[in-house]
Length: 124
Image 1: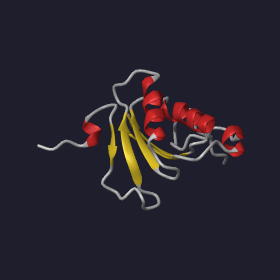
Image 2: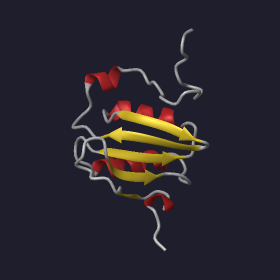
Image 3: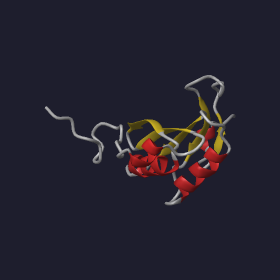
Image 4: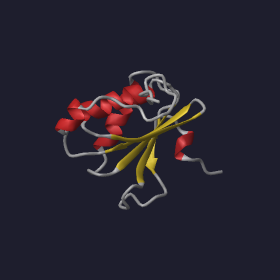
């Protein structure tokens, strides 16, 4: 029986998509079951292996993941380009960049998951 890369928490592995195609996931990292700060440590290690422009998908179980990964993304200049939640599982997509940009260092954190406690509230 074959296993998915997501069956092995803390592992990074290639996705079935062609990583050279814009918008495709180059690697997946499942951080479920890892204690803080290991999800960020493993993410930094996985990002080091990516070429600029490639995407890393991180799977996490903590509701704080959006905030923590958003802060890490801003501080490193590797933008958080997408996030979603399905139950207690959070999917975050980061793009590898050459170096931090001024915008990445000064832009406020804006979690993208509607209803997340730290998400910006829509004005009516």
